Amino acid sequence: MKAVYPGSFDPVTYGHLDIIERAAAIFDELTVSVLNNKAKTALFSVEERVNLLKEATKHLPNVKVDCFSGLLIDYAKQNDIHVSVRGLRAVTDFEYELQIAQTNSKFSGGELDTIFLTTSLEFAYLSSSTVKEIASFGGDITETVPKFVAQKVYEKFGITERVEI
Ligand code: PNS
Image 1 (cartoon, rainbow, N blue to C red):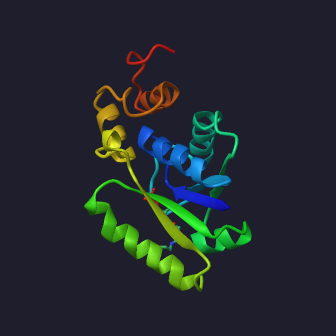
Image 2: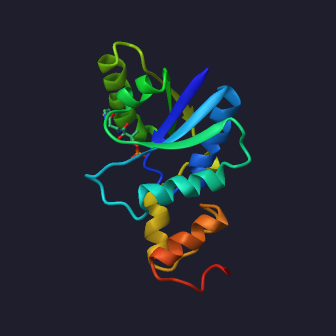
Image 3: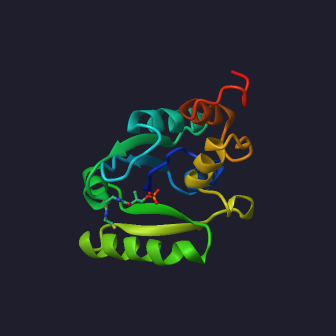
């Protein structure tokens, strides 16, 4: 069975990679798809985010990386995918995620279901936003994202001394 893991991935974190690895072990084929959201300002372009994800998932043969704009249900239909995977960190994620899942189910006529994986405890605190905030002040993000991602994040903030390139 195929599944899609949609998100902003700005940038991919160890929390996302935990969900990707576990979903890839459950589904035959997992497409990680970056939302091209023009309403949201991102640190990385969609192309950069796709490339970081490709590098971070290159050890997983059944994982593909793609991008989409517009509605997830339309993207899923075009690609004949009927399951969306999302990670749940804490109860604070639940209301938002429940609303998206129910909207997608309703507007796809039941064609797109959502499956939640609970984030591993060690990554429960982690979000792309906190990674960017910490890096912007020169903090250490090497335990939150792969090293090559950390380099790119620091570069965006003009910080060169944190990670040896
Ligand atoms: O990583 P994020 O930003 O929490 O991911 C949110 C995402 C991409 C899953 C969600 O915003 C989405 O699917 N957007 C596409 C537009 C859409 O289908 N909206 C209808 C459901 S609310």
